Length: 320
Ligand SMILES: Nc1ncnc2c1ncn2[C@@H]1O[C@H](COP(=O)(O)OP(=O)(O)O)[C@@H](O)[C@H]1O
Ligand SMILES: NC(=O)OP(=O)(O)O
Image (tube, rainbow, N blue to C red):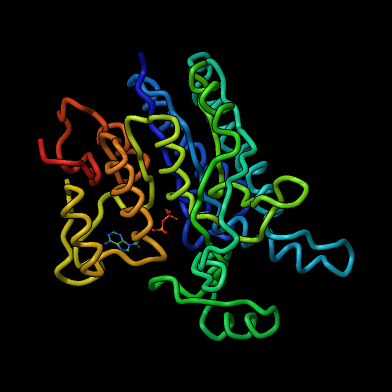
């Protein structure tokens, strides 16, 4: 019986730092991702892919605003659903091409995710979306468009939007059924389309959910064996960005919690990945990995035959 890995893929891996987000750039990046996912399949894993959408949802929201004098701008929750379609297609095409003749199928599931409208995150936007700006540009845009902005590491300034925690995945039974058919499933893209219970059923609510947290919730819901958080850095570091920075090959949940409490992992970037990994293990998952796409397979190799320079950072309950 194949094991199941839920793989979270950062939106920044699809539109990379310094890229403007053209279709060709995104398709090229998706092909690299598809090769890594197919390698995981070849190693015997069922794969559920949860893509991010930070750059894409922010870009698309700007396109909505810019065109608002000609056609109505649609709300942010709805723009999230557009990114699921666009990125689901992009990744689907890349996976179908890469896995030609080897895959039973690739299915993208439009996925809604329940959030709590009383989540304090609605009063404190933290999720960076869209392009990077200089401080001056960002301040002018914030004033003109009523944006909140933040410094995103040393990469520049970005718009931030509310990012509530995912509390439930509406289409989870359909996702489970597709995993049982050994399909590659693209699900809960962009962290899912945020919804809450309303008078007439579920209603959209404007926010962008963190895809690492949603990937963890989905992984727990489908009893996944592994949670793989793919990003643009091969390993998590201590004292990241300082002359003393050093890579971590493996951390126990206790060690990860201590480093998190020591402020080693910032909220807008590495923090959510570490929190998602810790929660996954605490809720019964076996292995969580944070790394680049090409190192995902070697990092999940239970035999441990790969050298440290081919693997990422593993988060485990206790050291073997
Ligand atoms: N302790 C750390 N170790 C490694 N990377 C870190 C650390 N702290 C912050 N980062 C930053 O986190 C980034 C990954 O987070 P983010 O860009 O939000 O990921 P993604 O969009 O891929 O989900 C890395 O590119 C790196 O700049
Ligand atoms: N929604 C989300 O978490 O997107 P990123 O991974 O692009 O930040």
